[in-house]
Image 1 (cartoon, rainbow, N blue to C red):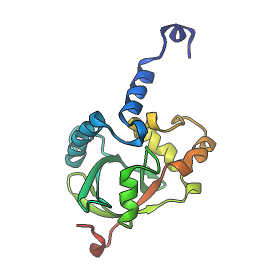
Image 2 (cartoon, rainbow, N blue to C red; image 1 turned 90 degrees about the vertical axis):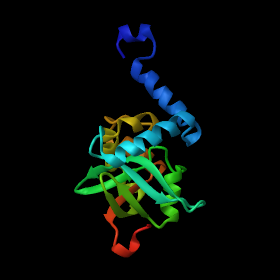
Image 3 (cartoon, rainbow, N blue to C red; image 1 turned 180 degrees about the vertical axis):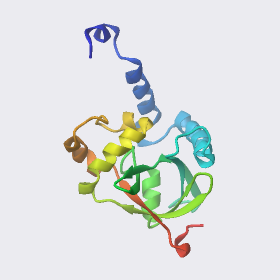
Length: 175
């Protein structure tokens, strides 16, 4: 931090990150975050005014049995595509994906049935780094910066599930 910024207090980015962490306090989206996620889900599904990596994940709820839609960012690494949980192990979509044996649908200008295969913690570090480079909204929730060394990502890898996206066989579609 520069001498000038030290006298001014927290910067705009620090304040924005604090608001984003507040919106997900306790690891769950609260009222404002839920409302914003609904809008983002619609945007991601249509592909309008969002980056091409922004998609909607649809997965069957483990308790309700209803289809749950969540806005996510697809990270690419070494020719594969991945989903990462910015909120960690306790994110509802992670629990739902595990309960559904990985069967889900990615939605962006069309529906793509997929199977999400969990990546072992030891292989997650470079994928987490790539994810933070692509998903600025996730940065307040992950305790490293996108410029951190790979060892820092390896240290937090067990706390942030990563799923490799593979095409679902026709019979494996959750719909």
